[in-house]
Image (cartoon, rainbow, N blue to C red):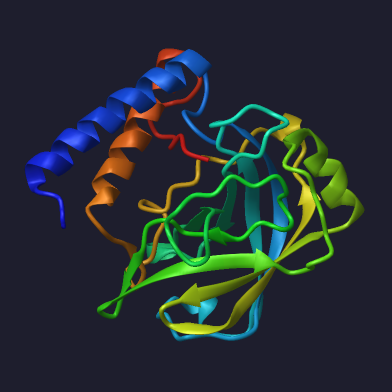
Amino acid sequence: MSATPFTSSRTASAARTVARRIAAARGGRAVHADGESFLATLHVVGHPMLGVPALDGPDDHDAIVRLSRAGFLPRPLPDVLGLAVRLPGAGGAGGDLDLLLASALWPGWLLTPRGDFASATYSTVLPYDHAGERLRFLAVPGDPTRRVRANTRLLAEAVAERPLVFVLGVDGADRRPLAWLSVHTPLPRDAGEPEGFDPVMNSHPALRPSGWLQEVRVAAYAGSRRGREAKGEVSATVNPHW
């Protein structure tokens, strides 16, 4: 059953308030505050012709990746893990393209706590509209033998020692691998966090986030940003998520 505009509006308003209060209390992101950022390479190997030039032909692209814990559960317990990917200049009008994936049952929206970054399966929780179809991006382990505990304090050392590799694909269009994502170089912490990942603002016209829950997501982002601004942590132009 789809949500009525009234229900959707009420839910979005509640999400904005909750995210604002959590961000203000934490003095940071409402969720996925615990994370590390890396340089990565996206090696496109197969393509279902999505209408996004960066993904529609074999090529290598520089990327920025953030691996994170949602913060629902304390260390050392497993948590919902985040895999955020930014392709600079690959979005609409020369902007960036952001893909946000979280550990989930494959393929789908059911978030799943995991205790290991390397062996988790990730999915974009909400679907995208593409040519009249709905699809999700998926990421599965590129090296089934690799283990990297879900402890962000250990991530930089683990990646510096050996790149962390994922296989990206698209459910609903083509089950063949779309690309290999190699996460290889930790970004220095004193360089600061990349500007917040945002799959709504940093998207492409051929690949638009869809569903009534998008209104809730946008409201939660705004609430988190307001909460951080209250602590003087971000400017009004910076998105807060991931």
